[in-house]
Image (tube, rainbow, N blue to C red; front, side, top):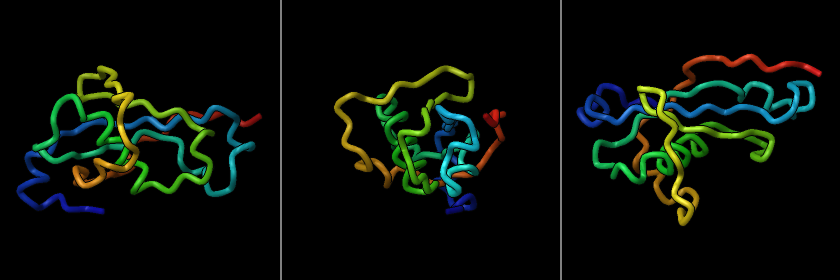
Amino acid sequence: MSEQNTPEAAEAVLVFVRAEPVKPRDELTYDDAGVPGIYAVQLSPKTEPALIASAALDGFHENVPVEVIDDFTYTVVDESGNTLDERPDHDSYSLSSLCVDVEFHDAIPVPSQ
């Protein structure tokens, strides 16, 4: 999903989602073995600050297929490395429309058993 040349993408809010497995790589499903990593998520500039983490996670999950969601922890950080918390009252996928783009940014080391 790449809309980087649109005016909205140029002004987008950039955050990062870190998808880290809670088990060794060889215990993940075949499809999930490629998921671990850090993803750059661009959100609409219209995203309210209190909703950034929730919108980023919605955009991530809509664009990155994860077979067993509970095999990972998901952390959202801003460009300065500050952790952003998801709202506890958030309805999953309700803010997906605020996502402009999701791209794999960097790998993270995942030990095998």
